[in-house]
Amino acid sequence: MQALFKQYCLLCGTTSDNDLCTPCRDSLPHPPLHCCAVCGLPASESRICGACLANPPAFDQTVAALRYAFPVDALVHSLKYQANLPMALVLADLLLARIDGIACPDFIVPMPLHPAKLRERGFNQALEIARNVSKKSGIPLLPAICERIRDTPSQTGLPWKERAKNIQNAFTCETDLTGKRIAILDDVMTTGATLNELAKVLRKGGATYVSGWVIARTLPGDV
Image (cartoon, rainbow, N blue to C red; front, top):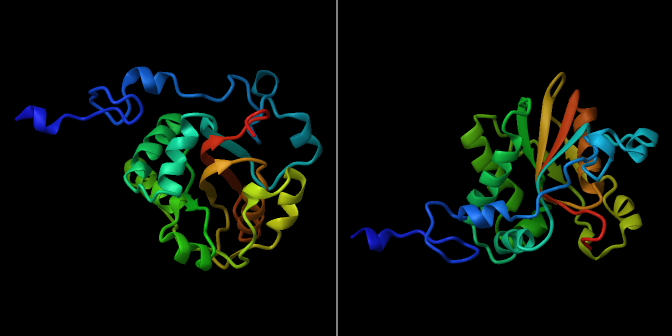
């Protein structure tokens, strides 16, 4: 009977006690040891990089579970574009392992989708991941306090320098967040333009500290 309930690694297909076997989990592309504490890009001894010192973003911290490279990109795509909703739990567990020991925020806010994109996709991948992170961590989830009011072109197809302009004034938040620490949860962070724009809105609402929690961070050379 036990053979009927065997679990297999999502990546290599071997029998495993978890969704990912230990060798596959250990081989995932992790961020560099030394990263800027703010933007998550490589930096000397995990200090704040020169770019963030010269032009501080609206967010205070970036926490990335993994680097956006194979096979992490395939796992994210499986959820985002193939509607593999159980993958949200797998990705949430990877992020939970990374945030273990980090000071907890007051709330988690998932990156919102524009209603048109939500109708097209049928779900918000950031919200699906955030639900699992909230449930397992005990950090309250605020799933609907922020709205995406501009249906902007996908950031993926734009040059890096145009992404900040593309996402300007795309979000709104009417909730009073005075004195609150917020973690914005998203699947992938590339330039940080989308995270920064939402962080600005949360700051206007009174948030005193904004973190970006992402499954994967794109590093130079990954795209």
